[in-house]
Amino acid sequence: MSTRRTLLPGLCFIVMTLAVLQTMVVPIVGTIGTQLGVGTTAAGWVLTANLLAAVIATPVIGRLADLHGKRPVLVGVLTVVLAGSLLAALTDSLVWLLVGRILQGVSYALFPIALAVLRDEMPREKLVGSMAILSGTLGVGGGFGLVLTGLLTADGADYHRVFWLTVAIVVVALAIAWFGVPVRPRHASGSVDWWGAVLLAGTLLLLFLALTQGRTWGWGSVATIGCAVAGALLGTVWWIFEKRIDAPLVAPRMLTHGPLLATNVATLFVGIGMFVNFLACSYFVQTPRAIAGYGFTANVLEASVVYLLPGAAVGVVAAVISGRLIRSFGPRRVLIAGAMIGLIGFAFVALAHDHTWQLITAGIVINMFVSLAFAALPNLLMAEVSAADTGVANSVNSIVRTVGTSIASATLTTVLAMFTIEGTVVARESVYTAAFAAGAVACLVVALVAMAIKSTPAAHESVVVGAGSEHVNETS
Image 1: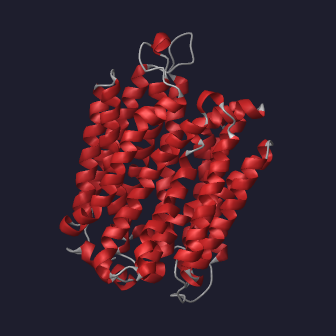
Image 2: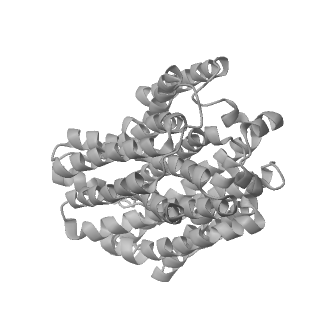
Image 3: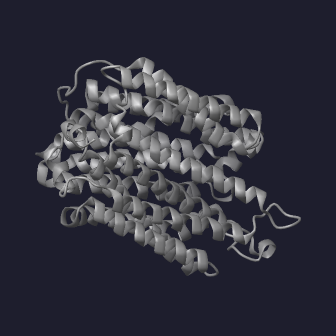
């Protein structure tokens, strides 16, 4: 019982680790480039390499957790992440920093494994609320990651501080995983579909290169189009291969079954909305008003503490109460309500962003949307899969979320660079207005997709009792 009481806080800290690792580097890419003496394009690979490692490793790690147990795989992942954090903290070489960021990229698998642990360990009556709090932590942690970066790198301080902090955080997370997560016998039998893993990794690698490097290479360049086309063709080969084997890495039904497909589509646009909020707000408030006629001339510290921290704090509260809301109204209704809240927040900031209180208020409202959405989505997902498929199903969902954040990041940075005030490198105010409007559209899509989800009438109850893969087969 004592282990069960400490399990949820411990897993929340582990998931917070992932969220912090995901966002802490975003504001300091330019600082890293300056301090290492490399160009912006080269420094940008600090983000790209991490994302590529994430999308390639996550489904394989999810399957390994299903096959060999959550705790040993969780400990293994955190050990790899610790090695990457130490390497990034110690090196002054861009090449070795990228290696460290690649190792840190496997941290994306922490979230689906943590959800699978909860499904195994939590009593029925507490599972929905526990998953809601854990999932909400993922959205909130991203905001705290930005805040911590602002505190550590104020006035151009050494970027290595950020990675030393990640070392300390990962050490604590590793201790929690080692001592706080119970050892359980494996639920599934079989082996990893390594050929499927290779084909999927190649597909995701090519598509992500096109997405993340399109601005640098040129969206109409041979390299960008070639990666996109090759990724689509390899993905087709992967799809055909997975349909023909008995134990695929990712069963095709996980991508085509109606409720699962809708949940993943909603996740994609939640990821877009979350990163539009993070990036657009951060860049907007740091814009020098004397040059642009808008913005607040904030430094990284002010942008983090003044403008992002209030939303992150309210997101914690939303995550805590989301479980009760899901038990009362079901995850589908909570997702719809959260999306409408997000739509209001984005629409407000698109129309009103001249004063500090407007940005702060919008951030608070949008973070409520992110927390509620992240709490509802895993409940919708896990109502449709068996316990044996929990790890890989949530891994696929995590990849979809990562794709959403990458789309938002690549699109926003490209547009900001394209439409600038004449004679400067500062983006026009209309670009930010369009970005916030795009966030509102993303929320609207989430609401419409959630309305279209057709699952069991009490989907939130089926999560608790553990709806199996038979449910997927019967309804597909």
